[in-house]
Amino acid sequence: MSERSITTILSTLRSISIGRIGVLLLIASQALFADPAGAADEPATVIVADPYLEMRTGPGVGYPKFHVVDRGEAVAILKRRTDWFLVRSTEGREGWVDRAQLQLTLQPSGEPVEFTAPGLADFTNSRWEAGVLAGDFGGANILSVYGAYSLNPHVGIEVWGSQILGNFSNGWMASLNVIHETWPDWRISPFFTLGTGVIHTEPKSTIVQGEDRTDQVAHVGAGVRMYATQRFLLRAEYKSYVVFTSRDDNEEVEEWKVGFAFFF
Image 1 (cartoon, rainbow, N blue to C red):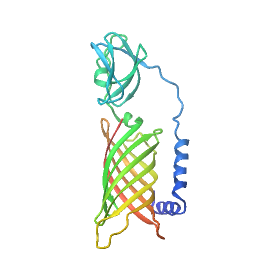
Image 2 (image 1 turned 120 degrees about the vertical axis):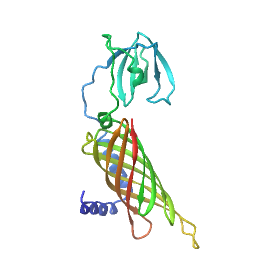
Image 3 (image 1 turned 90 degrees about the vertical axis):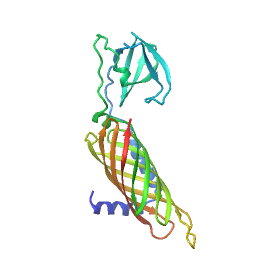
Image 4 (image 1 turned 45 degrees about the vertical axis):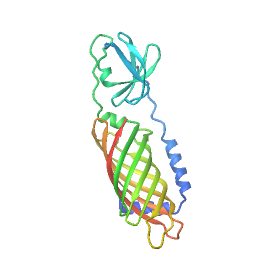
């Protein structure tokens, strides 16, 4: 995206209200929510070969175990989320099993089962993502955390929370973003983002104490997500903000951040 294009977008943002930007984001999200329809695949079936197979309520070791499938019973594999698989027992119970356990099962023919480690395809098709980034926000240090949900391989929604630490003031910022990836199947995948939110600034103590301020913000930006290994990725991005202040002139702030995230 050229510098002239960014300038044009920022000029447009100044002329419309934050409320309208939120409506535009909502409409775009709803229009792009559905994945392309496709025929459902028949779930694969495996036979428990170990004394038992433990099922959890969610895809992670932090979720409690709630059911055990005995040796010789069959389970159907419904879907995969990195190293975790959603399975269904013959009794109709559904739960999550990790890859290490599932690799000890057998195919109905008696052949061993093999599942590859999470890779680039899982990165492309993942639904959830969370990460931490740090960088520069208009000359101040910024530390951000975010959570994201992919509506489809190209479009996602992100929620951000940031702590801003400057020489003269500190603050925090919260925002909601829409992100678009043109080539999600690339190992290094560029993206564009548009969002809106709120920034709160608290001046540090001086002889004349300044007033705390809470303002609305909007931004456009671009960056890259790079698949690292297993379920981890690296992320770098640039955002150009417009701060809609209560004064006559709005403020423009540039932000650069890098960090890491994991997908699941």
